[in-house]
Amino acid sequence: MATDMMQAMNSMEEFLASSTYIDWQHPAVLQQARALAAGTDDAEEITRRCFEFVRDEIRHSWDYRQNPVTCKASDVLAHGTGYCYAKSHLLAALLRANQIPAGLCYQRLTITDVPPFCLHGLNAVYLPAHGWYRIDARGNKPGVDAAFCPPREQLAFAVRPPHEQDGRQIWSEPHPVIVEVLQQCATVELVMDNLPDADLHNAAVTP
Image (cartoon, rainbow, N blue to C red; front, side, top):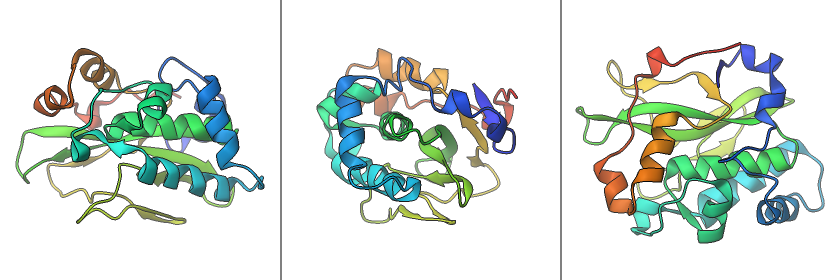
């Protein structure tokens, strides 16, 4: 499920697959993906369009206090809202629908500079000119300015050592702890009270 960035080049098929949560074969996701790619076949331009759509048009659930809690890409699109994790599922789906390899990445961050920790979800996309490149469609706000500007990464959050973690694995499917929280919590408030966490240094890495 998780693959080191160097190894990921050898297993592109899993980063193009449609699945339960990255359900890019859903008609609405396919329609949106095609609309975003209209008029171009340039992978970098399509990626920029998909990224900016999810970043700017899909509301971050907690920023807007907006229910329902979403997890599947198609549900994120239908309701126009999602936590960072769910938004990353939709972005991966839109990219995969356009035959652009995409996966999921995680950071382990703190909310107030001290533990407890929680995971933050973002994406990695394979761009022919740059290789694997991380993008963060969480949604901008004061103090958060994520952008698509390859080859330079401009993510929503900088990891603060020594305790926060910048996971370098690319996941083809969502981390199980994230699915569990999003599936079990009925409201955005419950998600905030039970934010998913995992030690990324112990993440399983498969070739």
